Amino acid sequence: MHDLFPRGAEAVLTLLGAWLGLIWGSTLQSVAPLLWWYAIFVGAYIFTGIWAAFAQADFQPKKLSFGMVKKALSFAIIILSHGLDVSFWYVLHDMPVFQSITLCAYALGEFGSIVANIERAGYGAALPPVLRRVFLTMEERFANLVDKKLDDVGLRDGKGRGGPDERDDQGR
Image 1 (spheres, rainbow, N blue to C red):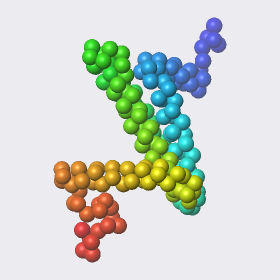
Image 2: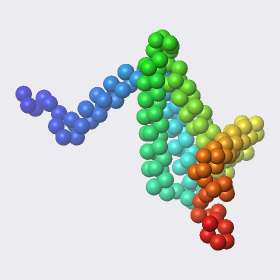
Image 3: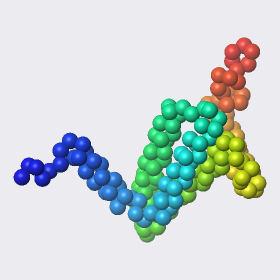
Image 4: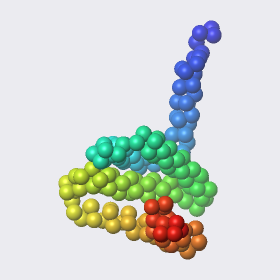
């Protein structure tokens, strides 16, 4: 009888599959089409990012693993946004508004990153000029807005991005 129960790696994979099924069924099923598209965008982003890194001879496994952790965190935030929809159930009546907005915002960001990766790989001319301009300008404006907000709350010194390359002659 004890041979019927999984052991070792088989038990771990069974448990992982059960948890993923529980998470999918309870939090993500209502936004499944959006989630599938987001997963497609994440896959395309990873592919174009690796492609651009190899095209520039700048592939670093550490950057890839850090990027994968960020993608896992984005999925966790999408799952947590389901809690907002549940919290507002009496107002929204089973409409996944917050989770949908979160998914759409992440998908738009991924699409912009795909455009930037294609540009970095040297194939930006293959993209429609309007699409290229829109996403590259939007990304630049967003970065400037974030920098301005950080300056407003005193978290940056107001000079560039604050990295070690952008210090003045006196090391500030």
